[in-house]
Length: 335
Ligand code: SF4
Image 1 (tube, rainbow, N blue to C red):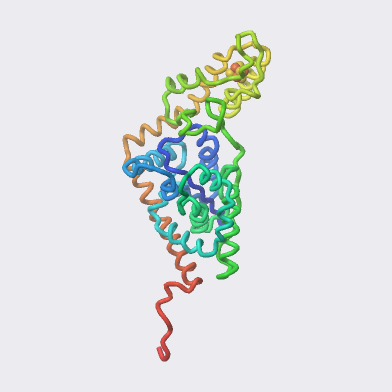
Image 2 (spheres, rainbow, N blue to C red):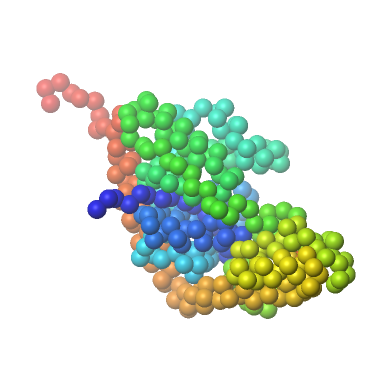
């Protein structure tokens, strides 16, 4: 039997997921777990590179784990764990720091963007992609499902693997980015990417009433001022959400109805709300079940970390030995 390829991906512990995270990443992960040996990591060490409240972090991590499981990640099929529960991530990142030129880090688009908005830039922000390289290579992962904005970081991971291998011998694979089909999910304001900080999201665990309350006032094609004005569905975010959640028949209904003013925006949104609710219903039910049994989430994370620490420890042993570290002291003549 051929060995399954390893997949690694991480997600920040932002608490509950929204449908943008779901469509852009997690739905794809649920499929990948059927085919590959997958490691899904809640990256709390990455999260602390931004301002945060320490007392909120444990709940953010726990809620993210619970929502991932509710969304369909199955601990029998994949490994779910928390980054800081496996100390080797930080250890390997340090080793990789020693082969990574600062210039490479300074040209990362995400770093430039975030650093330009900060008065004093912390080293953790600059070294963020080095920790990402360690996350991936600690498990010798070959495939990394990411959004488009992270492709540059996977390329840097390949570069770090090459540099390290060049200096200490072939050991780490050069992983490939798996860019999902869903590139960018716009927020309900139709202005920017769906993001919790912008308040333009629909949460994955929101109730039918909450979903409708958010969709009802959402921005549509501004050309449709009155009910009888025809619109262009391709400039409307409601239509793009239909394409993610609705059947081909409903998508065609929305497109035709919009162009001919045969339907009103409220009809169009109501049909979308029904379709979103249908897809999210089982996820919300699983989440409620897990909330009644939080020990299942805690056990999953514990088991996940244990499994990861085993793999990570063997990677570190090899990496350290090749770098001439932890060698047990100098050889003494005659011994
Ligand atoms: S009918 Fe639907 S697709 Fe057209 S503008 Fe209204 S909400 Fe958007």
